Image (cartoon, rainbow, N blue to C red; front, side, top):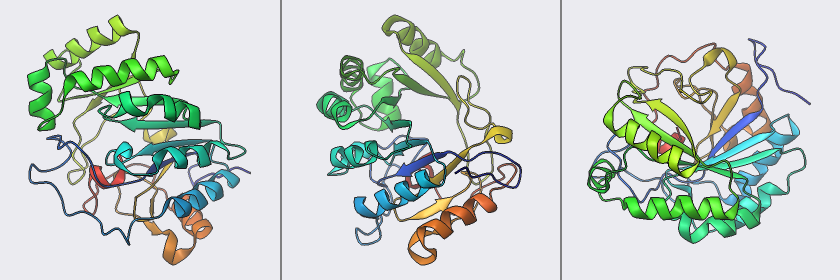
Length: 268
């Protein structure tokens, strides 16, 4: 079975935000003082998330990406990956992570069925990294990258946030690191949900509205057809299949703005 929206785009990609919690406080993602976290009772259990994933795959989703917050801070994430990897019809299972905990979990993730990872990295200067992330350990990320490569989570892709151009100092540093370590790189321009400020990802397919094939589900069960839209469909209130089909049916032709969500609770 296939799902097509009203603009004849085949929807086959689901991004699952498993938590709104994160061990970093990146300047472009959340305020320094942190955020008001979701109540544990409002966050979907992994069993509920699996039901959403299974229904989505039965409807034609072939790719799932796990996001956060930071997905590796949620207890039980390895078992959840193993559950997802057993879905018949799922062809690609990936994760976006800040990489801090990858050294610890890379082998287990690969053994559970995760196929590859995208790792956020905006500079190779340890002090600048600490400043951008408000306390992050750059060297832990590098160890995480090495662990991901060793575990076979390939190709390892680096998400590098830029303000205007990939010729900026930080981006050039990260580009050189990727060439040295055999990593793929994607340049993602700093976005603003409220203002609807976004652009196409250089090196990836994000931001290309005409070919957008994705849905997102937040940690508290809201299916979002577009990152830059206020539309959302609650799986608990509407039922999983109905929420998925409504999101596909109402997926906008192009993003506008989003003033009801944030990157940390949608998963980017």
